[in-house]
Structures are given as structure tokens and as C-alpha cells.
Amino acid sequence: REIPKVPALRGKTVVTLFYEDSTRTRLSFETAAKRLSADTMSFTVGSSSVGKGESLLDTVRTIQAMGVDAMVVRHHNAGAPHRIAQWVDAAVVNAGDGRHEHPTQALLDLLTLRRRLGADALAGLRVAIVGDVRHSRVARSGVKAFAAIGADVTVVGPPTLLPESLEGWAARAATDLDDVLPEVDVVYLLRIQRERLGAALFPSLREYTTRYGLTAERASRLKPDTVVMHPGPMNRGIEIAAEVADGPASIITDQVANGVAVRMAVLWSLLGSGGPIA
Image (cartoon, rainbow, N blue to C red; front, side):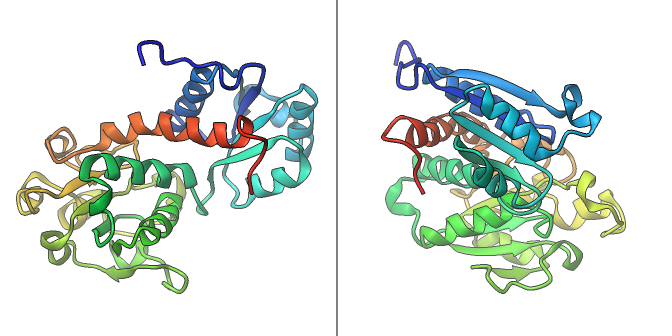
């Protein structure tokens, strides 16, 4: 559209309630709400009463009392958005909860692949999710989403960064990236989450890059039509080389752009078409 803003959610108020730092997800949700003509409010822990000891329950009830229609929640504790949904009447969207899930990231990843490869190419895709799978909410939601479209998923990383058990995961595990790469259609790289590790789970970042980073040399061995994805923010030179991140196989920028469209759809589903959905 020449004018991307539509009046679909005029009169609605959406608050972004983020207890963790975020650039892409927060801005994406705020942009999505504004393009639907909703009013937006932004909550940040550092400038709130949380520092004075206010509980999560009191915070969300205070915000609800201001007349909001939807809360977009990111929290360091798994299950926090679900608990908030039990406390408030507003619609609640999970924007990432601890190590648990990041559902809108999975949705935008599927949209990005659909637009790049075509709808008919999704079933049977061979996907490698590489890196810190154990601590990654993106990996958990991604495996569910890829499995739902019929993709074949392999999680790859050092044993210390893979789940202790794959029970409930629709994926297989591998520890040798070079064995997996030549056969996959999608390489999905995960950020090394130094803020979540809390322990030395591999000898050094240099060794991690040597064994599991998508270097230019490794990228040269990919099939010509293989695409590279990353949820961001990227550690360039660690899990992905700069020239690969900016190369023709990369659809990372497309992921960011499609995030706005997906989150517009989520907000519209919750607020614009008859009320909250299950």
C-alpha cells in the first residue's frame, strides 16, 4: 500500500511489557500496532516501580486499569505470559518467555520461507537449527513450527548446548555440523546467549566458531538453493561470518520485515475480528 497505515484497530490500546532487553521484537510489535492505528504504551523495567519491589501481578493490574486491550509480554520466567493471561481481561501475546517459547518468531520464520521458496516447497524441507538449542526459546518454537509444515529438523551443536533429552521434540540431534550441512535446505543459526549460559559450556568462542560457526568456507559447501536464517541479534564472526550474513543466501533481513506483517496479523486476530482467540 502507498499508505501502510490502516484504521483496523483505531481506539484500541496495545502495551509492550518487556522485562528483558529487545530491539527487533519490541519495535516490530509497536510498528505493527501503529500500522493498525492502535495506540501504544511501552513499559520498561528500568524506569518502572519494579525496582521498588512491585510484583508482576500488581504491575499488570495497574496497566490493565489504564484501559489497555492487549499486552505484549516478554519475561525471563517461562510461563509468565500464561500466568498474566489468567490475571487480566486484556489479550496477552507471548513475545518470549525465558527458555520456553517465542511463537511469533516461529510464525514469521514460516512466512519468510513461504515467500522465498513458495508454499509448495515447505513440506519436506530439511532444516538444521544450529547452536545453543538447550537455552533457546526460538529453537523450541521453531521445531514445533517446522514440524507442523512437514519439515525434517535436525538440531546441531556441542552436546552441552543440546537438550538433555529430545523427548517431545520433533527433531533429531547431531554434533557434527559438517556432516549435516551438505544436505539441508535451511540453516537456522542461533545466537550464543552469553547472558543465559551461566557456565562455560564450551572451551572458547574461537573453538565454537571453528566447529559450529557458518564461516565463508562452510557456506561455500551449501547447496546453491540453501537459505540462511538467524533470529537476531547476530554475533558476527562467532555463529555467522559477516559475508555470509550479508550474502545472497541470507534471508535474515526478510525475517525482520516479515515480523511486522505477522505481528499485525496476530494483533488483528486478537483485537479486530470479534475478540480474543484461544
